Length: 118
Image 1 (cartoon, rainbow, N blue to C red):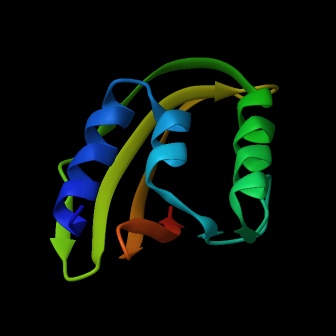
Image 2: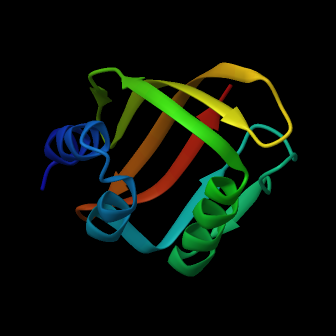
C-alpha cells in the first residue's frame, strides 16, 4: 500500500471504531510511539507488545467515552497527519475534549512511527 492508501485505511477504520484492529493491520512490529511529554502514558513506546499494553492501560483509565472526530489525512511523502478530537471522561476527572495532531511515518508499506501533539 502507498502512504495515501495507508492513511485512508487508518482514518476509515478508526472512524469505524476499529482502532486496535488498524494497529494489527498497518503497524510495523517495531513501531515507535512518541507522546509530547511524560504523563499518564510513557514518553516513548517501542514494539507492538508495548503498544498494545499502552492502549490497554489508557482504556483502563477512561470512565466514559462519548465520541471522537477524525480529520481526513494530509499526506506528504512517507508521512501523513490527522487531527483527532476525543470527547471523554477519565476516571476521577471532569469530562473534556482532547485535541491532538497525530503524525505517522510509513516505510515498506507499514507505519513505523507515530507521534502525538496535544
